[in-house]
Image (cartoon, rainbow, N blue to C red; front, side, top):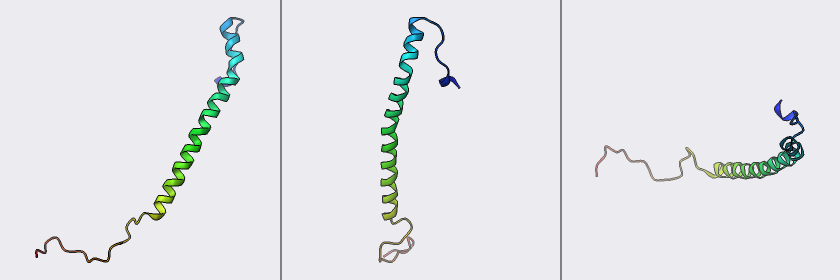
Length: 71
């Protein structure tokens, strides 16, 4: 698993990577939190809309006319 390995070496870049990986992971998790909240809200709204959508139910009392009938 690549995330479990720390950057090797004693150079400046390796030290910076080791010091910043926890902050990068936390930043990524906090940013994804808002995405998950937004998706949950969108799913909730879609569920509510689907409850009130008429779907295949007939909502009109007017009789259907045959398209071949001409007045």
